[in-house]
Length: 250
Image (cartoon, rainbow, N blue to C red; front, side, top):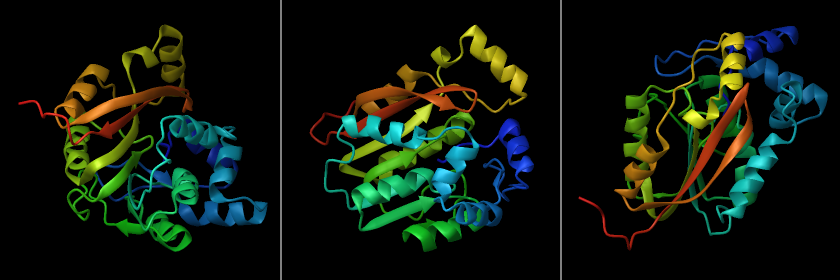
C-alpha cells in the first residue's frame, strides 16, 4: 500500500521527526524512511501498519479495504502464490499474509530498506524492482496479484507495461486487485482540495479502457468499490478474475 506519500503526509511526518527517502529509481516516488518508522512503531507498541494508520488519521481503513475485497471471494480460495507491486511498508501485506498464509509472497518494492524489512518481517521474497516489470516472477505462477496506490501515480505507458506483466504472471484462476483514479473521483470540490494540497501526481485512467484491456486477456471484472480515504480524495478499486474458459478476443 502501499500509499503514495505526498507533501501533506511529508509535512505531518516531519512533525514526528520522520523524513521521506528519495528512491533511487526514476519510475518511483519518494517513500518514508524505514528505520524511524519501524523504531517509532516499536516504541508505540503497534505494528508498522497500525502506527502509520494512526498518524495519518486513517485508522481502520486497511481493514475496510480487506473486508470489501473479502466480499468478492478474494481470500476464499487456496492461495499459494501472491505477488504485490509497490508493497511499501507492508500495510496490506500484513493483512493479506495473515489471511492467506501463502506458500510464496513476492514483492516489488523499490525502496531497498523497506524491501529488506518486508523480507525479514513477513517472509516476503523482495525482488529488485525496476519500476516497470515483474521480471523475476514466473509466467502463469500467481494466484493473487495486488497493487495498492500504485497505478494512481504512474504515467499511462508504465501502467500499461505493468498490465502486460500482470497478464503474463497470472495463472488461469487468478484474482487481480488494484485501484485507479477515474474522472468520477474528481468532482469540482475534490479537485479544489487536491489543488490546495499542492500535490500534482494523480494520473487518471479510463475505466472502460482498463476493463476492455483485461477482457481481451480473459479477465472478468467481478467487483469494484471506492477507497474513500485515498490521500485527500478517493480512488476506485477494480477486482478481476481470470476465466481460462473464455474465448480470447482478437
